[in-house]
Length: 389
Image (tube, rainbow, N blue to C red; front, side):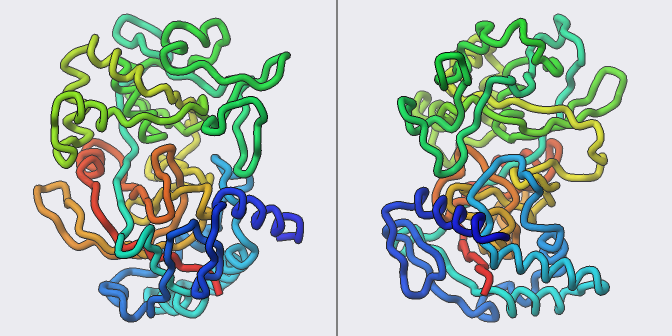
């Protein structure tokens, strides 16, 4: 990385994290009140049992694509240098679990991130859904998915837009300058019609809502073929959790509000679903990618394929893509039990609701079973950043 990119990384990080307090134990700035504590890796429960070769293989693929799918803070030069060393080691021959473990121990500091004194991190889960759809509109498939509009402009981390609300992450370029992009209700009412942006049609707005929350998907077409959907942008308006709204409206304890329960409620009443979904003003656009191998995971924000139970989404305004993160939690196995889950993951994605220094979203996999398990994950976790030496 050249000096200009290095300075850009530091400037963007400082902008995103003001006000700051740089603790003596931390090699990077931290938000006020956040603590970083050195942890010897061999003291981590499960560290010696994990398959670090799996995490190493992902890390050796690179910190992120150029350009990434969703731009975040620029990886610091020391992280890119660690990725380069990993690629060189991988090119020299197979890297087994012990060699992968030594690589991470020798090249990184292990720092436990605490949002506040005594607090831990928090983890949810997400997945790649699969739905039926069509490349042509019909009574069976009336709900459109849209490609990225040509006038959509995404705000880069650290960029200011005078005259627009600071919470907007995207806007529409017009002859008068940048303006707020239409919200979900306006798009549902026809704001994008006549632009030729429709890429396929789904059975109902609930399927579209699930795809937009997850950020990717597989669509099975009437001839049996499958097309893949990749995130291509959003209208920039703040995300609203419909699960939280429904929990409050119908007095459902938050711990009982799973994605399965929310979707079942929406599917049961089309009018109610339309009204509730419109409360989430955020709207996601997709691109079709028929070139992705069927066995490959979806493309994450870093522009690289995701690996089930090894790839995580992080707050891209705080952490760079490619960063290894050790997590330690007890999470549902999808069969009615909770089991210990301690492993090394790689930050390869981001999300509108993934905000905060110790917040993560675990990619569980593709299909209905993965979706069921992902919807059950809302658990505290250790959040230990591996920062390059």
